[in-house]
Image (tube, rainbow, N blue to C red):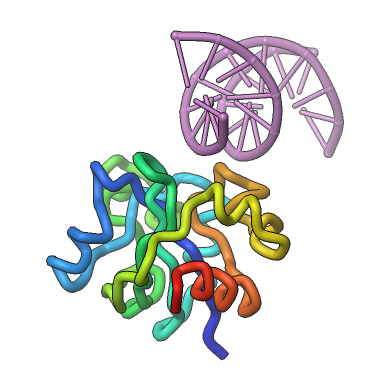
Amino acid sequence: MTSRWLVKTEPETYSFETLLKEKRTCWDLVRNYAARNNLKAMKVGDQAFVYHSVGPKSIVGICEIIKEHYPDPKAVDEGEPPDRWVAVDVKPVRKIKAPVTLAQLKAHKTLSKMMLVKQSRLSVCPVTEAEWSAVLVLAGE
DNA sequence: GCCAACGTTGGC
DNA sequence: GCCAACGTTGGC
């Protein structure tokens, strides 16, 4: 049973375009327990929307989990216990046809209830199957 | 740049 | 273990 997710990133730090170029990356630096728990629940093969949290705030693409959670190396470098913060590895799947903005999500009956909208501070959040397909519709797919 | 909402910390 | 104070984040 695969699940759907949404991960946020600041395009200046790490954009979806960079992921497309690099082909895979370590999704690290999550420092929030709720988000961390979501990372831990991710399985290989799960897909996630990639959301740019600055600039035009919008969902821009899809990535896939290729390695399940392991200790975040940067957190360990900083002296954190290895079981505290985790990272996963992801690869890009594709760019979506048209980015879906936060404003669009808020205006949508189903998507306005998304955890991304409700709990804006959560950087890794689950997406339901219904939300997943509704976003793709807005993306023109 | 401001302010509201949320998370985390620390004192009791 | 609770709650107030503080710090940080994110939307506008």
